[in-house]
Image (cartoon, rainbow, N blue to C red; front, side, top):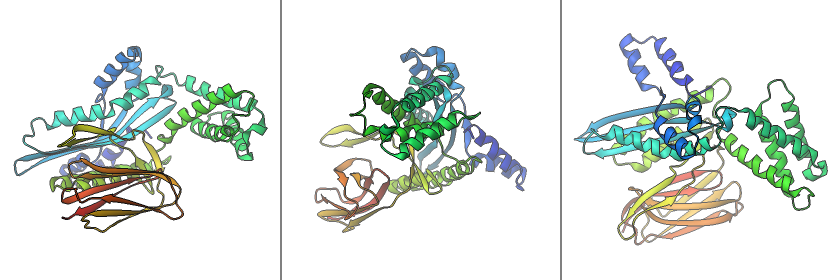
Length: 399
């Protein structure tokens, strides 16, 4: 199911409902919309900079966007939001990447410029993703990506089966070969099996006589699978996509209300909730987190820009004392060993402190302590990021 199908589905649902005609229009307006041409300017600019102007038109035809926007005024201030999903083609259309995004404006003096500001922010936020996809585009000819997969499977098969390191590797490559021989191969399955087989070869590459070929295979398989990790966001019947659409609609609407009340942490939690399909979460971030510090001036913290479907795994975070006065302790329980990134920010997004723990032990948990006596009094946001999950906690600082 493509994103472009979403509008038709929702229109049909609302049109066939038992609502009066007037309310059917309202129902449609509450559902997600489809947009075409929204990123055309960015695509043209990036295609020109990459010397791929001839490919821009075919690329645009494969770009799909579904979004939900809203705005209102409160006590003279204007509030506006726009959130949605963008599907980009890569490798000639053989694979797709799907991104979610959310842009919020709150307490602006005038509503005259909010629409243009939201539009510009959305386009610039997704510019790096569009550029990355264009780098793999070859005018809609997906056969090159498929041929690369077939060559990889052939090359890896030509290596000694003893190099696989385990029966699992042999089974993976045999599954890839069998799928390629079907009438309509599932290239997602082929690439995933290829990736599994290459993982088995990694440990053996130092001893292998054809190390150069193996290194190329490892590099290419990892590159391909990065794309595939963000490919499947719904079941074959679209059930997952419908659930995600519902979450985007309800949670983002609620997030607007929380922003209006100054509850930025609550709004962020709603954004994370919106990006869930069943028990899985779409994990994404906003390229760079900007902040302003009275002593350091303006700056930015580099954030992870990849998006992937991440199975929800056990992550428990306890913060004490809460409220905190001079020291804050975090007890982090992990399901698997993991790196841990912890950031503490105020409600304006200013970074107050951060710590990093490499390869934390999941057997006994990890305790991280922050000295908070110099933090400003009020509510702060504690974000804990592991290899598997992200959790945000609210903590009150009292002096």
